[in-house]
Image 1 (tube, helix red, strand yellow):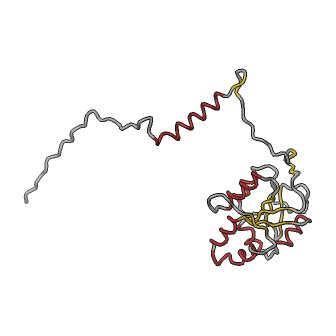
Image 2 (spheres, rainbow, N blue to C red; image 1 turned 90 degrees about the vertical axis):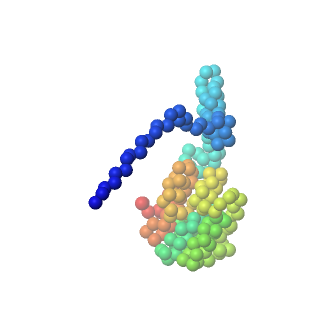
Image 3 (cartoon, one colour; image 1 turned 30 degrees about the horizontal axis):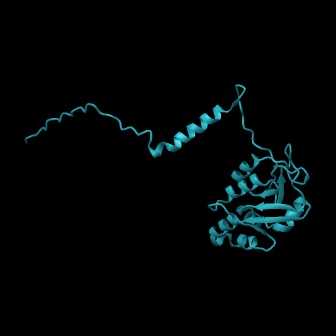
Length: 205
């Protein structure tokens, strides 16, 4: 038996290797340059040597955290999963709203919520049938996309005259950051509301 040994190939070192650099005028760096310019502009805003801070405008209807724009009839923005949870708990949406708030209520469905219900298919067909009830007011959406959570948060940010009905934990967390917006949810087989000073019948969670 003859064993053939192959000699090892010597790797030649490459000299004068240069990293490719982007041209500073490249279009891909434009957004980075714009961000840097915005930061510089913020730092440049000074008055008598002191930096000027931009404070967000507080809505006129807020008195501290109390929202004076809320009053009967209450306008309730309904989320996609809220109607389905109401069906699972065998609750009538319209009577349960009135039992919770003890006043006339106007449930509202946005185009995004309706689109989500239609996308969910036959599993949510009963919820879709309830959402198409003429007692629900319909709010048209003019923005791009059909993501209901972003739609509801933007609505509430623009107009603080709504109550948001949802059982989604992520959406609740986002709305809690907005002062003066009550949240309605389902607890112990009935509708409950938080951050609403006029109603005291909500069970503690």
